[in-house]
Length: 119
Length: 228
Image (cartoon, rainbow over all chains, first blue to last red; front, side, top):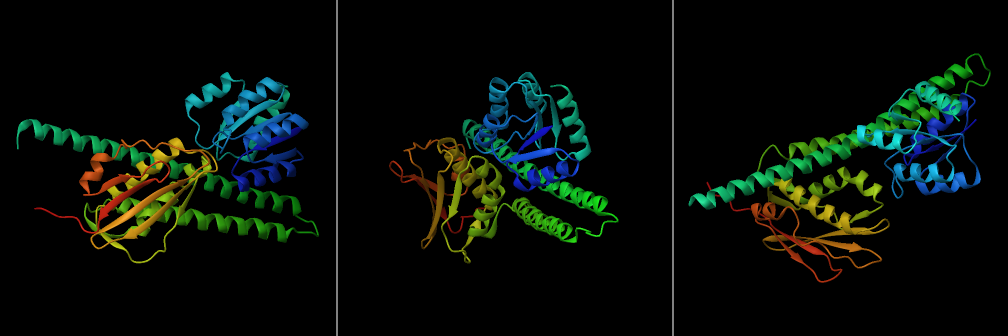
């Protein structure tokens, strides 16, 4: 299983990446929406953990584009400030689940596993 | 005072109060988002330390260097959080008295630091092109912050990622000029009818709009006339 974390908060993304790797999950990290699209054009991860509020292209735009170009990627929205409206919109666009920060890494892992089995 | 003028004054005051509440709510929203990120980083960092301890238990390589690096990161994050909380606390206390002596540079810097997240999100920089010294103004710092916030919000509507706002301060005999310029690849037209125009009158300030890209200047009296 390959996981891609997309978050502009570099420290958070890198630590999450390390914690997932320690749990034997092959994880990569990028820090903005444009880099995420570039990444998936070369390597298709099974699951994407995607922040919403990012400079440049925001998470919702990334989700919208990913679901057109790479619909098999399962997307988990992982945000600090998501509203019910955001959750509704993300799920409408095809997000697998919607998780609020901060979350226990094991909770995130269970979402990743569930998303992967949904592929 | 004629009834009509009295009603108009009351409506203006209510408008300013409602708009200031929106401004405070906006600052709090930016701040809580930032604080939530800081908490998440500290939470995950602490979790990583526990992971490493668990994994390295009983191993000859106890991973102390890695643990030390992560705990150093937590300390750094706590420092950042403390600084941010200090700015918010100072911001809140500016509202204690409607009239006080305040350091103009500190008041501007505090607002910019609290707006940092939204500026970063839009990839817009703010250069505070002034030397910090003891420039004291007698007036209402909260209303000034509200006006500067409205000006910056106006810029944020027009500027694009990579653009910048430059703030200069020029002290005169009885006034101080806070000059706003922008650095942008395209020409922008600033909306002259900024939301805080009533607040500008309230602190005895005025705004002069430049031509084209020359920005705008907020002229502020160094002391306000107080009538009892």
